[in-house]
Amino acid sequence: MFQYIDNKKEPMRKVDTAWLRMETPHNLMMITGMMFLDKKPDFHVFCQVLEKKFLKFRRFKQLALQNASGSYWQDDCYFDISAHVREVALPGEADYSELQKYVSHLASSPLDKNKPLWCFHIVENYQSGPVIVARIHHCYADGIALIQVLLSMTNTTRTRSCQFNDVEDINEKRLKLGLLKQVINPAKKQFNQSLKMLGEMSYLGKKIFQDPRLLEQGIGESLDVIQELFYALTLSNDPKNVFKSELCTRKRVAWAESLPLDEITAIAKATGTTVNDVLISNLSGALREYMIEQGDNPDNKTIRATVPVNLRPLKHAKELGNHFGLVFLELPIDEANPLARLLRVHQSMNELKSSKQALVALGLLSLVGLAPQTIQNILLNEFSRKATAVLTNVPGPQVPLYIAGCEIEKIMFWVPQNGTIGMGISILSYNSKVEFGLIVDKNLVPQPHKVIEKFPMQFLLLKEVIMLHPWDGEVHPELLE
Image (cartoon, rainbow, N blue to C red; front, side):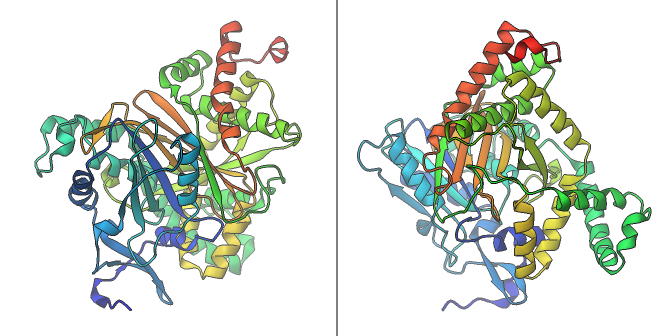
């Protein structure tokens, strides 16, 4: 057994502890991503990129450990980068189906807890070009932090992506800072407010358990937080549907054809909505169509997705860890008309923007990280019953990036699910295109490509309807036909 030096232990943040302890056999807490390249990277050059750029984040050389007193980080005294980077070849025709099977297998396989919880796989023979598959445990970082990691590993020119000197070109630094600002959407006010409310929630939670009558009394701004918590706890459970049932221990992944970001932006402007509204409306229509095909009538059902909301200000951008809250978003699968569906999503998103659900979730995750594992499981399972999917939308860089001398042509990732949730939907924009990814429990959807292929079809349908009937912000009866 390995021996470690006690004074090198570093306490883990409570939010990160929650994600570490959240892992179950049927829901692994990994973020899985893919980078499609224009050519195969030299193995040694790629390892140099990891040594010089990825591992400059000290956390990636540390083990995530737990004992009776809590969770902590500790340097891996036996760290060996070769244990984290592998070259693989797909069998058969090495097509979409084979890559899908391979990534699905990785997404269903736990990382080695005796090593830092991350791994890169270089798929050298995919028919459309080499692919890098990355797996990183959620306790190390959230999606926004990992975009920052990606930016640190890449450059905006092929030549510079193979240079490893410590002095980065000033123009490159400015460009990366601009890209990071676009991604991070600074949230200093929300972040500071969340820290304040976290302390208040911890104190108030104890008081309210002792005296529930406090809920009826005015307790300042924190009353809003308690009301949001009460609202979340009293939401009805999502109904059983084709995407929500008993889970097994195997995941299946799929990804859709890229959509042009400029066309999505044009639709958002024409309808007075946002790019995010259009994308969520689009995926709601795709889920609806699949349910109908499977004989599951969506007309009388409402399902929700938990949506991460960034609470990380720009000055904390280079920190790893998790700095986000969660909100419950209704997906209007019961609405057949694409314009009406878009309007409903827009209204729901506007309501969520003024709520404190995200702050409540950040505080709740911190409190969960303090609670015993049994209590944590009860709380997380209770929350997960109220949603059918996890939905993540990450704005990536809008210029081409290069890594180890290779151009990154497409980026895709899949988010983990928790508790009884068995489906994750990922949206990422990169280099003027939008990517959709789906990860789902094999017991729910054995062939997820049959769902994901409907995403571009729904976008085309929405575009056609808007071209035929320019929208004035109202859904008229004739548009329902």
